[in-house]
Amino acid sequence: MRFKFSLAIMLGLTLLLAGCGDGNGAENGAENGTESSRAEASEELVYASTKDILDMNPHLYAGSMPAQGMVYESLVENTKDGIKPLLAESWEISEDGKVYTFHLRQDVKFHDGEPFNAEAVKQNIEAVQHNAAKHSWIKLSTKIVSSNVIDEYTVQFVLSEAYYPALTELSMTRPYVFISPNDLINGDSKDGVSGYNGTGPYKLKEHKVEQYAVFEANEQYWGGAPKVKRITAKVLPEGETTFLALQKGEVNFVFTDDRGTDSLDVEAMNQLVDSGDYQLVRSEPMNTKMIVANSSKQGSPAQDTKVREAIWHAIDRETISKQIFAGTEAPANTLFSSNVNYANVPMKERAYDPEAAKRLLDEAGWILAEGEAVRAKDGQKLAMKLYYDVNSGSQKTEAEFIQHAVGQIGMQLEVIGEESTSIANRRSTGDYDLLMNQTWGLAYDPQSTIAAFTSETSYRHTTSGIARAEELYGKIDEVMVASDETQRAALYKDILTIVHDEAVFIPLTNGSVTVIAPANLQDVSFKQTQFELPFEQMHFDASE
Image (cartoon, rainbow, N blue to C red):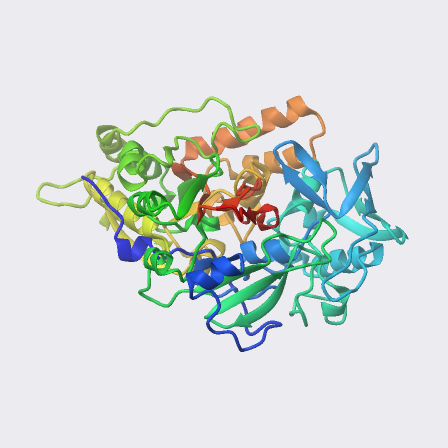
């Protein structure tokens, strides 16, 4: 069976650009990014979004990560070569691993002219920590005891115990990034901020709710003024496709974003590239797309390990890879791809095998009675709901493919599309049987996805119903403070083996970030995160 993306669905690219009200922006300029000649003349990038940028408060989570990544910065940056300086030029870690001392750049200002210094760092860190319960998914929030100003450009963080991912978590897009102290409200950000002034290469200039957001180059950027002077996120109305918008010149840049939303289908991308006006650039594998099973939902068949294993065996990942993604995403057989640190460990193989799936269900007492299409056990039908992101063309197609596949083994699956915020709420409240999601990605894994196994706002409901849940949580606590590399690797192996054996995270494919950009745009590259792009490094080749 060949499943093909509907053009009208697939070409409605989402960037999870999200945003809250009018922000700092003016209400004029409604024609931003609507003509290709204007975009080319101004060397502007105009990209498509099916959502507004929502709340640009970098200490909360409703807003667009790609947009926040342009405006705000962290102390350090996660790169292929490890953690590198960003707003901090250097740092030292005490022998006991509890004290981090950062030496800050002295030539940095916030967009409103406020100096970036140790006091600004302290105020931001304390603002985040005042809302620590909101950040429970990031273990560093539970470890910071204090932030202390040593001198104008030296700041020190004291932790309750050694925590090896500290620098990695300080490098994330949020929440440990910096907004002007003038934008904090009574020193806090948990109830909102009064402006969106960061230190990053772009400033939020205009914002018209549900229409567009304009980011202009920060000409005083400490790293040098960006050469692309204007970036516009254009919200496409319902029914308008990215493909048509590209052809009409209303947008000239698209990329797949975080949380599994999609770009154009392969045929559309090839057509754009063949026109000579666009180029395609794709990153290495960044994440694993997966089904998350709620092991703790009372009365749900998802509580049964054999049911979860049966779903795993029933899914033909090769067909998903070839027919839905045209080979651009590889089949995934484990939670993390082998290029993720600590994840290249042997696991029990679960190949596509519908007969094995049927045997597992028989063993678990889910019997298919003669003349029936759906199995039952003790009078209960083997029926569940699978939730997917309504803005993702591939998730809908995959969900329907999986619905058909498990139907062949006697399982009834209702597929339901919802907004990503609703999916996230279900994940945090436990109101689901199955939902589609993805790992955090290269810059964050394995530690962030694994830390989320214990978080009430993330995957606690997914993992808490398994027999070895307490052992799992204990090992997660241990690995986060392990200073010995051999011990850390052994703990990660145990953690990954437990969740693999329990089949609570059912992998589908390994995803990448794909960019369609003007053919004359140079230095299109990627960060170690699927959530943002280094726009400040890009420039147009005037000779083309």
